[in-house]
Length: 145
Image (cartoon, rainbow, N blue to C red; front, side, top):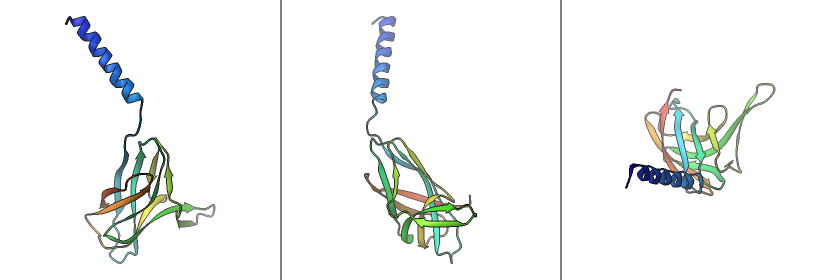
């Protein structure tokens, strides 16, 4: 094989790889940057934060979670009205994350609420529950951010 034909073959192979990659198709649903703020041992609840990236070809809905470190976990959204009054409400219908979209679970926004936490330092396991995808288990470090 001559150097020019080797170069041509390599270019064709690279084009095929890029074409297959560009075709897309289902890939993964990922959770990153998970954390929970440290709370005192008398706290009745603690929030869990992370980012979900939906690399699937269909929408998924976050419907809640579970953990041995919490009596229960609820999906919540925080809002602040025009009078600067903060309110938190459960998202009973879950949170839809479309294909190719990300959702940020963050302070003063959407989060999972750990009711009656039992772990106050280190980290704890949480299973994030989905409708439209398999549940994902994450390890949530407790941090001061």
